[in-house]
Amino acid sequence: MSVAIGIDLGTTNTVVASVSGGEAFTLTYGDGQRLIPSVVSFHPSGQVLVGQKAVERRFVDSENTIFSVKRLIGRAWETDDVQRARVRLPFRLVEGMKHEVLVTARGEELTLPEISAFVLRHAKAVAEEALGETVEQAVITVPANFNDLQRAATKAAGKLAGLEVLRILNEPTAAALAYGQGQFLDEGKGRPKDERVAIYDLGGGTFDVTILDLAGNVFEVLSTAGDTALGGDDIDQLIADRMADELLKLHRIDARAHPPVYGALRVAAERLKCELSTRDEYTIDLRTIGYAERGEEIPFNFRMTRPELEWASVGLLDRTLEVCGLALQRAHLNVTDIDHILLVGGCTRMPLVSRKVEQLFKKAPLLKVNPDEVVALGAAIQSSALARRRTRASMVVPSDVPEAPVDEPSIRTDSLVPLPAGAEPLELDEPKSRSSRSPGSQSKQPLPASTAIAPVIPKAPAVPTGMPGAAAIAQIPLRTQAVRVPSAGVLRAAAPLLIDVTPLSLHVETAGGFADRLIETNTPVPCDRTRVFSTASDFQTKVTIRVAQGEKPRFDDNTYLGEVELSGIEPRPRGNVQIAVTFELDADGILNVRARDESRGVEATARLQPFATQHEPDELARMRQRQVRYGVVG
Ligand code: AMP
Image 1 (cartoon, helix red, strand yellow):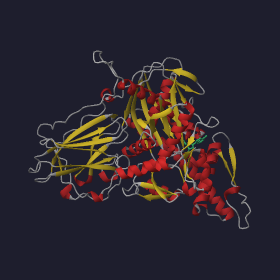
Image 2 (cartoon, rainbow, N blue to C red):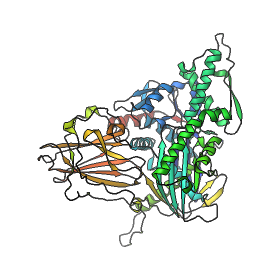
Image 3 (tube, helix red, strand yellow):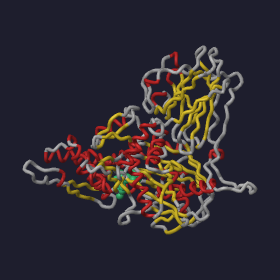
Image 4 (cartoon, protein in one colour):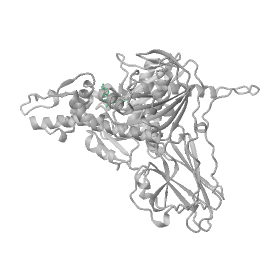
């Protein structure tokens, strides 16, 4: 019998949980450790060390010890975040053929999903050891504002690790699920009919805030906002920079010019930050940071007080409050409309975070569940529910017995949106050369006029957004499901209905380089939207639909996801061929695009996953071989 698990694949740490006997619990390893450092080190022996063993190698083998992958996964090489990381990280990043980020270790170039796959393989092994059973299925969580590429790359990592990824679930939704299941929100007073909950999630590399509406057993995401490049790592860097300044001043050692020394300062800085969550001041001994000319240790200690740390990090935390304001605005709510604030992510242990959150929301956040574990627990609940549904669905039903009703996700089946009377369709033109664009890259080339897609007014509207009923992710109620949280004992509740939303709008490119929105931010998923376009040139036989995700009006300022080419269309005078473009967003938030020539019925489909499943078969085979070749040691 195989078990389905929940995995919180964090920037800094990964946590695994599972459901058994109606209770969700975090799985431990070693002496009861729950956090698996998301660090992978390539040992000279050919083995891959993962977790705590890899952390130890950060000091001695920083060039072959990879961390913070979540900050880079699914990002294109030329983005600012990648370029900044490239300078800062002690291991080498290089650009791949598709403008994706590769890491080098021991002379080999590896994709980021491969690195995450090593962490996931170790997480799977930890779960199998703890449960004494094989693990084949998992729900993996991602920050709510991860885009299509980041989600797809995470899913690819799961597959490479030998897991069937049942769902890519948003971290705040998972947290709400764990809290909701545990009935922490009502504390036995009987839950009010409708509560609004803000989930403030500050991890190592990302920040996001999500506002949910909890009505009975229905969890509906009202809005989400975030910053995928803001987290505890930034605070570590601020501290490490101070340490580096002092090291330079006192001992004339330039840590920034020596990646291994700077790497060691980063590790020390993180330790200092964590210690200052429970102490007023802390002095870290850095004598082993280097050796003086005659080989003696450098006498270097670094002392910091909590007020000093708070003073250094307040600017970063204020940025998180601005993002909270945006989430409230998107949900059309005021701070006073929020009933509870939940804290998620290791960094929320900093006392300043609670104070800042309280200052904004005018109420203290709930601190009942270990913020490191709550996401994995929620993922485990979802995983167990989905696995049970799979099992039910695969059961053989005798033909004369009516099938028991199964709550399947209700997927919208909107067909074409008819053009309003008198409206002309949007225009598509012939595809231009693919060479100027690679998936994930953001081309700065203006569109040549001859290849533009021109919106025509009045425009055919997309299907209106916000249809929660139709977009719900329904689950079989789990009568005995429960969450066990260390401080709170065992609690029981039925599995709720989850209604998640897409964090970013999805567009096609139109004439003049504008982004034409087909799916709005905060639309419940899964969903689909169709809009009809027309050809822009006479006797055109091909069209290209270019797709991007983001909120900017200019197409090129958003994240380019890829393109779909439809050939074999009927050669007719311009405007006389209608092309229906459909965006389908699945429950994982991953996009599928279809283009159809309405008169001929020719259709083209593409899953826009350039860094993930769209790897060429030989590339995929190489990645799989490497996974097999490297033994993982945790
Ligand atoms: P996560 O991405 O949720 O695993 O969170 C990891 C981040 O939380 C890292 O930046 C850690 O340094 C930080 N963190 C973990 N424990 C603490 C603590 N006790 N105080 C402050 N930050 C912490």
